[in-house]
Image (cartoon, rainbow, N blue to C red):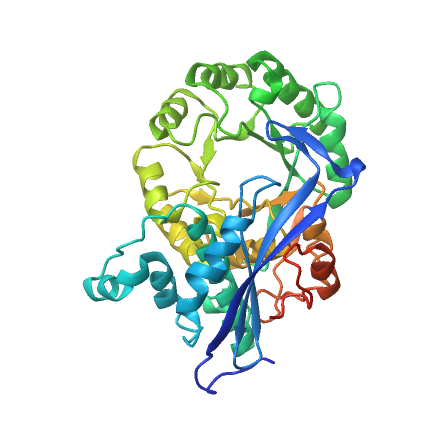
Length: 405
């Protein structure tokens, strides 16, 4: 059901977290500083309305492939859902504030500033993001419009994507990234570096091997997952100075923004960060300290599409670009596509190359890059058709029926 313009409120009937556990076949597993990845866990969030429309979002239990989903599901089902039932799903900004400020939401709206709950950057924040994405999906379906139309219209009809992976050693890293190019015509690639390398020299050698195979025309990024010290990060940047890295992602611990700023000040390589940051307030701090050139909010972590859009606006005021972190399912990637369509300063998206059935099999029309780009879908909401059989096969809460109640 769609096309509800002029039909009155879109009342929320129920909200439910749907936890999925997707085992990875041996051939699709990889090893990084997070260990051996043998599964991909996802928390889908379904917002069911009295109009018969169901919106779907994603809440992130962890930045990587594996996370314990119980806390996020409890936050959706126990903390947030009761306060949303009976509310109008179209009031997305007010509902965001209700979830963020909790019992003081009324005071916050009256005063004009947020009065957040204590758990504003934990499981509750991830749960909030999943609900928010689902609300945008539901409202888009209601009006028969893609989400980007509701966010201000379209800036682009296609967006560039980079192949995100790159775990192999110096002997095979070029082969691994070259195989990505053959799969989707990618012209941009990201590889992992840092503690998994053992030392900075090996990390730099792997970057050099990748560049040798990809050639000078390709864009190449590196992600340290916050595992380097400041001296190590500076040394790494010196060693790769001639290899034209597009960015070094999270060189140092994310809890020490000044360390990241020190690396950025010393290095010629641009610094990217933000995949584990929550709300625009954290990104404000990252900008103010001078910690990053490229901001990387994850809509399933930072507070949903509402907050990701605010972060993109904040970034634009400081001449920063945004490259969202999208290591998740097809739902999260669809949210990233809508953000890229609506925001001028989101010129590139992450396309995960790890084994992830939830990216490739969860929906009827999974995102497929061609020529290193993906077209922005024109369908209502996020433009998704969730496969109930996939959900039922992988959900771990004992229920069936796809994302229906």
